[in-house]
Image (cartoon, rainbow over all chains, first blue to last red; front, side, top):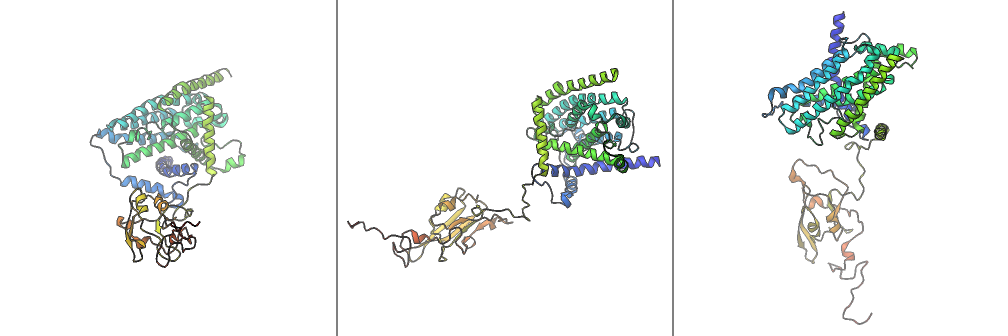
Length: 325
Length: 175
């Protein structure tokens, strides 16, 4: 029975993540349309949702071309890396108290490690393409992701200090008594949000891609399903970061405590998890719609001169409060 | 710095409000956009109130056309009235600028609010005179060039039309 549950959760996560990523392609464009006073794609199927399927069919039916000047092995490996690491990252996401693939006692570190490994995908994609724009994109992503990695880890340390565990299930359980960490760790939340955007290289921090200056950045030479895998990886990382923000800062499967107990008993905990994650994804898309892309040096100085001190201050305050209060 | 962050948050809020704004999109094939009467679309040749074609084959439209998509040949009937022997507009070149309409001294060539001229074959975009001529008067009803131009044509001498004065006798000394 136990094994069957795990089996179901693994395949559910796999299919759910792929399905959600495909639907997100449509959903993002639709939502962007609304925010820009347009309608967005609304022709294929009800509300245009068939666009997700049409996109998948289009990508699968395209010629799978490897440029003859590219480093073939690296070129083919690069797009798979991001998908593999992002899917592995889902292994530690607790959907509810009992519904998860693995409750590692280093769950948080595992997640950070997996997102860090995803940088190889962009880096190798840029390097293996033998294209100067792709190389510039890969270079940028290396600098950007390595530097934002630092604050991403550090911003979570306050949470770890309070909950005393790296296990994500324990972190959520701590929030049941302590209240959501978004309040007590607000600085950490802000920094994690920024770093999360930079990690998943979504707008406004999508400088590795930067189509206005680098053609398409690291995936300039990619087409067909290999490009599709990069796309998939981007959306997977969007979902993963959103679910991590939900888990770590918004109390995961816990319902909002101001609601009456009757509602909290009635609504299943998994609903809260998905509702919060969905809201978070919508917020990421809103960021894309509203905020212009910074210059590359602005991005780096913003990270090192503002976010790093902020995290350190957060860490100091949290430590002091825990020690002396 | 704080001001910059605040401005980002305000822009996030304002963009978010657009979720409730009405979309500007016109769902074209189902919902037709409103085109003003003076919209510059497909070109037509109009007729005067008597049903004769207005064009006098003066070639001004062809000269004014910046992309040279108008071709015509002048011909003359037995009373000395000019008319185009053929009149051809290549709509695959036409940029709908309306300069021909501005140049036309007889209000013959006019642009209409119709842009749906898709063809599978490019040759079908070349419109001949029989395709261009409409039976009506277009945007200027009641206008007839020969009733105001002071030119003698069949059944009408100089100065006999409605709004014309008799030609001045330049050899007379009387006022």
